[in-house]
Length: 175
Image (cartoon, rainbow, N blue to C red):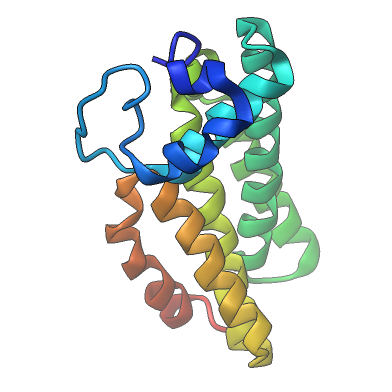
């Protein structure tokens, strides 16, 4: 679905087609309604960078997972109340649980699961920017939250109900 996808094989010239069609349209020319332009662009760009080699895709998955782990740590640190040392310790422990949890082996091993990690990255960044906006009232933080949420939506449709996360963060984790 990815390495044998005609559009992925075409390289960066296929980017407009990827953005205009469902995710696997280049492999199965049926518009399935699975519109994930961010994930499609990720597969296309990564494929161009690694010459469609599976090992390169797996390295990119590890890099994306590493970014998620770092963002999870920052997010947990931001929402953990209390003294600095206690909050840092709790957020580090929570991040380590996230890092080593066996459920994450699938998203790292399976090339197709980049959409999950891109969605999580967008949601976490949206949450961080939203909390920053609440703390500073800077419009760039509000726009950053909107842009990060758009990345999450463009990665996977599971981001749709997560729109409730932003007001909940505001309510439960205000400074």
